[in-house]
Length: 98
Image (cartoon, rainbow, N blue to C red; front, side):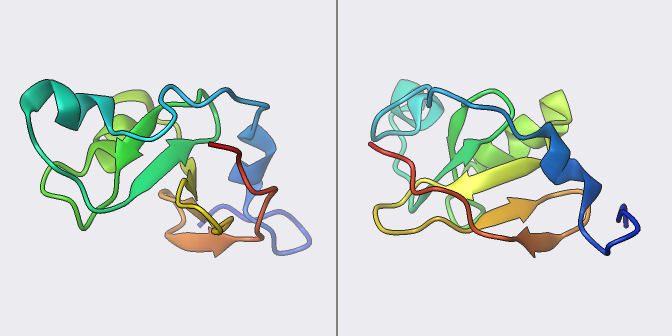
């Protein structure tokens, strides 16, 4: 695990102001003609992908392809954040507009 001297995940320092790549879909699932369960947005680059409960797990695949570790729920009314590397939930952020 990667924590600073205050016990916080160091990966939250990677979070940037992002523009989500999609307003309401998993573009990779749409391209494949597949469905998804929930959406997640990468807080490093704005990639929108489907969650681990979805068949294709595009948010996690994005992490493995890019190393971008921090996502946020992209579901209406949710603002929780998660670090793939440390496998922990981070403090909530601002609710992203869709």
